[in-house]
Length: 135
Image (cartoon, rainbow, N blue to C red; front, side):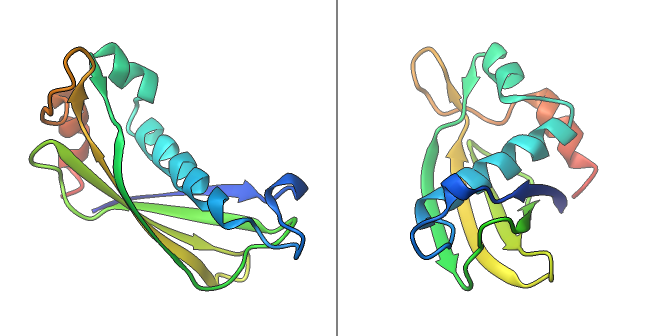
C-alpha cells in the first residue's frame, strides 16, 4: 500500500456563505493529493504526459462527514490500496482537520491512455517500478 499526506490551508475563496468549504472543491483537494503522491514517487503529470500517456478521471465518489472551514489546515491522505495491473488506477482519499477528525472520503478512478489515439494502456513501466516496492 502506498500512502502520502498533503496539507492545505483553507482560504476564504474556498468557502460558502456558511463558512464551510464548498462541496465542489473537494475534487480539487483529491487532485492535489494525487499530484503530490505522484511527485513523491519522483514524477509529475507533465513527466507522464511526456511519455505519451494521459490520465483522465473516469469515476469519482465522495462522502461528506463534517465540514472543513475557513482557515482550517486540512490533511489530504492519498492511498493506493492495490498496485494497478491494467489501465486503471484508483486513488483513495481521506481528508482530516487539525484535530484529526475525518471530514471527507473519496475514491477517484483514472485510466492510463495513449495521448494520441485515446487507447487504454497499462501504467508506464517506470512508474510501476517505483510503486512495486509498496505492495
